[in-house]
Length: 232
Image (cartoon, rainbow, N blue to C red; front, side, top):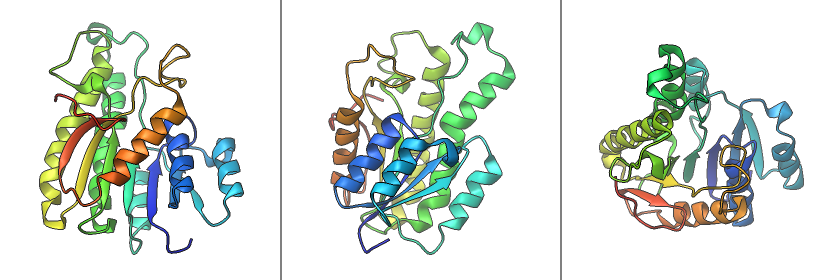
């Protein structure tokens, strides 16, 4: 890769993550993009092939704690200008705390909240001091203030991510880094459904604008893909 700004996008095999990789490359960044199964991430591999030396595809399963730690360690010596940890799952189809088992709740919380923070913390030493931006894809559904009910397990996992990210920010102050907790909008993806009002391209373009535009702000904010503040 050349001396372009270097970004990392975790969870880039499809949907918003893939759109963000495409947008970052279009804006002059080189990208390390992860997928749980790179051999099956056809669109991501095609994007990498279309931009030789600009997109590095790596394997990462956020449900594998040891793999998360090893991946972060493998980036030692590289300097990341921006990071978006985008991986997440919808959780049990029943979406109800009353029907939830310990196993499925633990899996949901680990992938949506614990693993992202674990990875983000491990990457702090690889981020560019003063201007580095670490972003987590959260959701407005993680807002306690705006909780209108429904989808309670998913809401709880994103609220946990938001809370943990605030704690992580306290650890980042000495490096003058920026942390963003981001709502991508209700997007037409496999998770969001075909009736969602926001396209992948629109969400990705906004997410990248917010992510890159925050460099040097050295704050923690909960923002949507248009840069609007969301109540915690």
